[in-house]
Length: 315
Image (cartoon, rainbow, N blue to C red):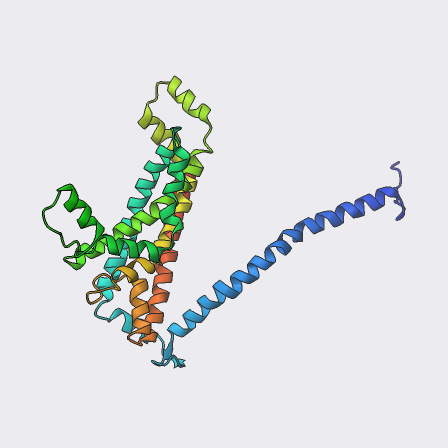
C-alpha cells in the first residue's frame, strides 16, 4: 500500500530553499532583458524611429523649403530613377564599394599575416598602421588632395627631385583618374581596420595546429588555405560586412576631394543625395535615394552573411 504524500511545512527550511531557487530562476529569465533595455531604447529612438520617418517622407511630397505635404505614392522614387545622373552615380557607387572593400580586404589579410609574425619593431609598425584609420577622413582626404596637386603637390616635387619625371604631371587630368584617386584613398584608410580584425582572429588560433600541419608535411600555402583562412573567417565576415556599410555610406572622402565634379561624374550615392537635397533642393527624390541605398545595404549584407553561414554549415 503506497505511503501518503509528505506535505512540507511552509516554514520548513526545505520549502524556503525551494521558493528561493524558483525566484532565482525567474529572475535569471528576465534579468538579461532588463540590462538590455537601455540599449534597446536607444536603438529604437535613434535608429529605428528615424528610419521609419525617412520611409514615410519618401512617400510624401516635400517642398524645397522642407515642408512635408500629403501622400504621393511612388512619385519620389520614379523621379529619383529618372534623374540624369542616376545611372552614373549607381555605377560609381558599385565600383567604389567593390574596389575599396575588395582590395582593402586582400591587403588587410596580407598585412595581418605579416604582423602576426615576430620581428623587431612589430609594435611600432602596428602603431603606425593604425594612424590612417584613427585620423579623421576629412583630414586624410585633404592631405591626399594636397599631395596630388599639379602646381605644388608633394608627389610631383618628390618625383622631380628623384629624377623620375622631368616635368610636373597632372594627376587629375580626367574624372576617371580622379575617381581612381578617391578609391585609392578609401583603400588606404580602410586597410588598418581589416588588418586588425583579421589579426585578432589570427592570434586566437592555437599554434599546435600549425605544428601538427608541419609534421604532416604541409607547407605555407596548404596551412594558409586549410587552417588560417577557415579559422579567421568569422573575423573576416565581421570586417567585410562592416566595411560594406561604412564604405557605402562614406561621405567625407568623395566630398572633400571632388564634391562629385565634374557634373556628378565622381559622385557616389551618399554625396549625390546630399547635393540633391541641400544644393538642388529636390528633397523628395533625395529621400527616396536614401531609402534605396538602405535597402541595397540590407540586401548585400544579408546575402553575404547567408552565403558565409551556408559555407560554415556545409560538411
